[in-house]
Image 1 (cartoon, rainbow, N blue to C red):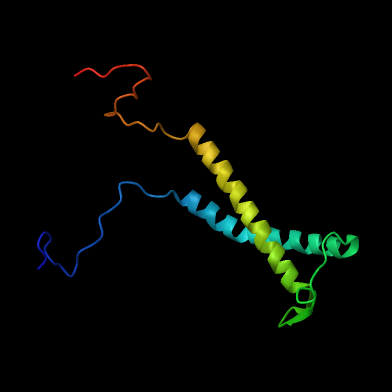
Image 2 (cartoon, rainbow, N blue to C red):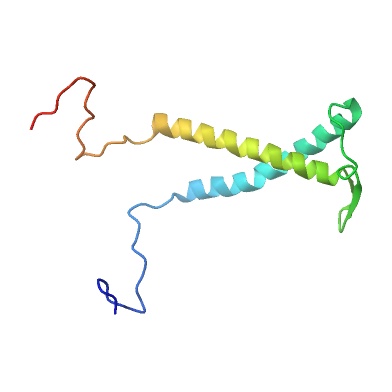
Length: 127
């Protein structure tokens, strides 16, 4: 036995006072699928345009044609994957920033019903 808690083989984790709404779970799942797919499509366009315009030189390791089973030969696969990762990070960062901005403007108050309002600067606290 432990010192403060009784051991029980059926002990459960404490239930949270809040749960995540299923709609938000669905939106998060869709974002985890849609953002990388759109990022790969954008990466293919960016790499193709880079090859035509010559913005950045593509190393030989990134410019090889790779045979992918059930897909066929894919040109510039490693370059596409590298640009996909960068675009995915940018996409998730933008959505995270927008969500935090919306939550700070439209979310619930940071103070509960038992909290006192914050003291203004220069105001003294009386007992």
